[in-house]
Image (cartoon, rainbow, N blue to C red; front, side, top):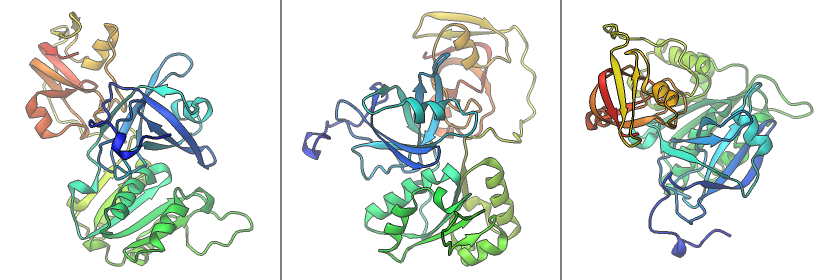
Length: 353
Ligand code: FES
């Protein structure tokens, strides 16, 4: 049984401690919520909307996968991720088929910048598709638990009504406060079930009906990359100020704008992994992450394209070229941190690995 509040440890969970799976709750076909607790009784401290990277011991060697946290830090005793296994998925399939209560996993984080706590506003518009609902569920639960329900229009697109994630919990919240308005749209209906909601892909007309005052709202969007691109284009063409639009995705960006940069001289680089006592020669266009792996060192990683922040390490000296996708803040860069997956050494570089 979980410890009572009085018995929680004083310190929040640190990712040096493994997490124990305590429950696997089916949500829909190929989708489940997995709850974790630290064996020490530590509590979880994170921001609603952040993610966790899990080390998964799949056949053929461990892989690391990043999952947005679907629970809320207002309920800090346990932490949940909601996982959907897509066709061909390795990590999601392993979690749904092999992970059982009592098993322990190494986890890294929580991390990420996608949270409404960083963007206070009077009104929000949450838009998600599929398992992109997870960070928005975390934020909605946080808002509900805060006792000051802000004004949220919660839009979710699913294939069928039975695949709307967290529907019952959301309806329970929404049935008790006027400030949470649910708007679901589906592409097809379930057999023998009445569907009173919207039908079809999210469109400009539908958005105007769902949230007539969308121009006044701070928008948070999460889902597959094409879905988010369509939402962004829709809002832009409607005159929405995109400075108030925030999105989260763990798909590789379809188009990454790479700033023009001088080509690094090949063969001119060297990386010192200071904590491991290893120095490796490499090319100036190798990433720190790739060189670490070749040297037999493990730097935790998730997306591997500069978005999730899992591979953040401290640089002691030297220069790197780094083109990232928002996984590191300007403050962290000023403190000397780099993202190993997209930092390329220029000459001799020393990192705390
Ligand atoms: S692994 Fe995600 S930012 Fe490097």
